[in-house]
Amino acid sequence: MLNFTKIDRNNPLKRGVMERIKDFNEVYTVFDKNKAEEQAERCIGCGDPYCHNKCPLHNIIPAWLKETANNDLELAFNISNETSPFPEILGRICPQDVLCEGDCTLNDTHGAITIGAVETHISETGFEKGLKPKFSHKKIGKKVAVVGSGPAGISAATFLLREGVDVDMYERANKAGGLLTYGIPGFKLEKERVQRRIDWLCEAGMTLHTNCEIGKDKSFDELEKNYDAVFIGIGATKGKYPGIDGEKNENVHLAMEFLTQIQKRNFEEKVENFIDVKGKNVVVIGGGDTAMDCVRTSVREGATSVKCLYRRDELNMPGSKKEVVNSKEEGVEFVFNVSPKSITTEGVNLLETTMSEADESGRQSVKIVENSDYLEVADVIILALGFDQELPQFIKDTSLELDKWNGIKVNEKYQSSNSKIYSGGDSVRGADLAVTAAADGKMAAKAIVESFK
Ligand code: SF4
Image (cartoon, rainbow, N blue to C red; front, side, top):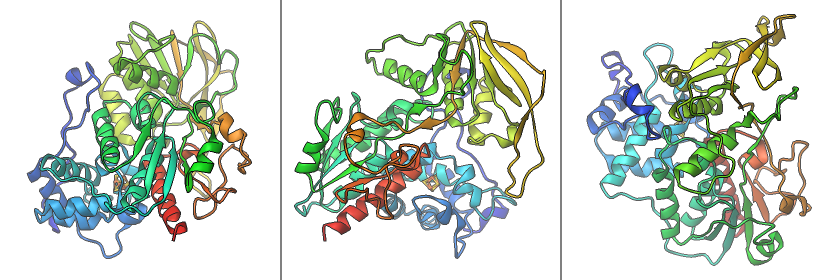
């Protein structure tokens, strides 16, 4: 440990650009043992580690870094898998620069510890050596229905099964995993990683019902009657529109619709009205990680040109910095300080913007520059402007209290206005990160188990 003055921060190696844009396989390689040990040795073992506090799962990061540096993979694996339902997945997809690594004590001076990459290494190498997540063999005689198989649902199921609770998971899609399976592209997270976790949950006794939509294939009343508790983790996938003329034209598509179609096609599932961007000029409106997923997917789909339009400057982009770098490397062009005014069959009419001085919170507001309209020619326009909560019929039919954004209202124990029904993740808080959904699923599972005592 304490080697940060001698050893530089290193990121895992990336596949070459010309090779990686030809497929949907992951871009980053996994650290080998020597690299992981070397990078873990840079940790200074802070007494009150900011990285741990900033991680929504409160992973005990310095402890598993220490055991990695000490070459005790099994202990590192156990510590890492104790607090996280799927460390190797979050190590790949978390925006570490705004979470654990952003708060690492070394971040501003010597470069943060590569926490995510070491986290991925620990579990992947552990799996290769035959280590597996542990579940309880002792059942406590309680049964919970988990509605939705995304990060919140998988996390809730994991922590319930660990406590000996029986779990039935209901998923309306063909495969489990929700956003992890259908939303996040394979170049960030290969789908076998998600399936492996689902398989282990089934091995631990979970019954998975795919192609089963609650309210259509099974009534919510049935769940309420037949289970000791129900956890709802249905996400927030309804794309937002900017409220401009032409936003529902045929050449305009929502980000999640596009990403899901591509993934379904990659799974060889049936896709209707496929959004084909091959040979097209594509613009993506938005500056978050979903926008980056769309531009990079468009590159892989053979678009002639791909542009990302964002209304603030590069410094104020909300997404992960590494995803912007990767997009640029892959040939995406960025146009900053522009706001869409209207959409036509020719493309997007844009207005230039400027940014005000930062207010007390550090936030700068966006101002439109008058008479600055110009046309950005495009064949396909993809909107990546965030997500609203869906309000499926089965939720409408319950008497659950909702907030004004249609989120399910829960108390500090993740319990809704119906004490038997719990919820967490995006269906409560609105569109957020996979890791916050995982943290909610974990806390809700603990509260459910506590309620059985
Ligand atoms: Fe960092 Fe995310 Fe892992 Fe937490 S789960 S340690 S925030 S990469």
